[in-house]
Length: 259
Image (cartoon, rainbow, N blue to C red):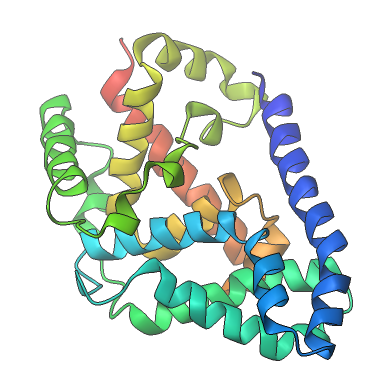
């Protein structure tokens, strides 16, 4: 798939989500006015799967980086609170765009309140251009042990249904000028290897960079929407996405290309 087709895919998925919300929002407002909370929650559940996946990924990352108590929270804790917030505020939204962005913004706020820190290994970014293949292999081995082992625990975090969308090279390379480099790396890697390497790099990057990349590539928000969700400028959101992709490209190039 070429970069233009990749961008079209993101756009199509985002439009599908917005269309679903546009159809559902008026009915949610009607149910709120009728104070029918049972039907309200049932209808809302139809919109929430992508949010559940998003919460799971953020929780796993926070636990792995030891910013989050291992057994203190469940996914449903955040979903339940989000439902309460939506029910209380649903009537303030006049269109699906406002509602769609607000859901992610509120979800981020709930998670950020629970996550205790956003520290990261500054040496990783400084040295990303110098890691040897052996060092990359060691990082991946450590990541895999934590990712698949007892560290992640909780059944609701291990549900395979949350992980159908693996990261791919298409998430990293989007410019036509990069086609040759992507093709060279693509010949070297299996899809599972590419996904795992991208996860390893993201795991070591600052949480804002991870979050912007996830919101753009898997939640299909626009840069403007991401800026609103994270309360940052559009330029800052673009910078975070660009810096993340740059780190991923450098790591892939150094580990998998052949001179």
